[in-house]
Image 1: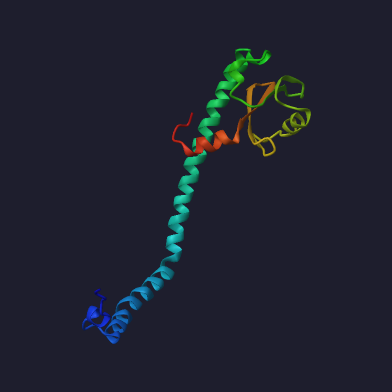
Image 2: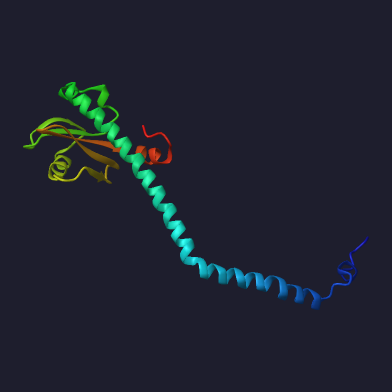
Length: 167
């Protein structure tokens, strides 16, 4: 059986030649790479932050477009009097709370008293996240004397943010 002879396999290469090769080829490459990285670290971070900022702007625009489309739909349904009875048009929303500015409820769907109190106390807010129910609530003002809070599941928001379709 034939076994390779390592001296014959390496031929004229000796340990000193390999050591010099590594010393003069790889060590300068490694050192200049490390020095170059440290000199350009700030620039690399700035480019990375700019890319993240652009991505965040696109994502927020995507979410704003989606919520605006849902607000428009709620305004249309409110004016069409769908809120007076249970409607299939409202099934895409997990929870809906419609009430007058004085706090008297007009239409409630999957809203308990504690959640209604939380929504009534959100005077200036337009978005509210309920992590216990994993929902994103958004406020719509369909006319001058009523407010509608509707919710979308956070899973749907995650899928929306990963897709290209704003609706």
